[in-house]
Image (cartoon, rainbow, N blue to C red):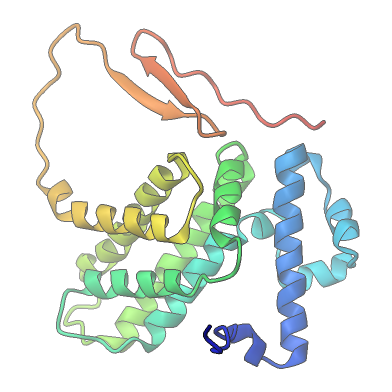
Length: 253
């Protein structure tokens, strides 16, 4: 039998005050996702969320800007870790897009908190039926892209600061992640961080081919068939002759 001690959680090395802040923030995120999933996003008030965690609204706003912010915390934490890595990553001689990809994969490796993948899944399912969350996500994505560009321009010797390729590299990374996240969310089985990383690798590998993809016109009269999945992950068959059914919001009960 081995006497080796289990690996120490990096958070355990933080001062007690910081560990308490992290626990409070995690409790807010977990409780918010649980309540929003049960009652619907609009079925839970901020007061009810704060009461459930036994904190004041003033304390809540020390951690999050609003309900949308706390509901999207799992993926936002990932992208903040991405920016942290990008600020300190040693630039190499390879393509900028590869540097961005490496930074995002490194950020995924840092998402070691128990249940992170499950929280991402709950958050994505809520966003699919909550317009205000989707709008918040677009705003956050825009701000993150601008921050990544600023870091690249500050740290790399880019001949032309107005070269569109730098922004396109950031945009392609975000597009690949959204593609990977959609496929991962719709997949069967228990979601895992490793599974999301695998989908992300597949999406990144497909980027070059997407730039040269060609296709001819569809033969007349041939029905387009596709498979989508509802919020619960169940497949929904549709075609041009059978419109996609509208998603319904979770009931408030």
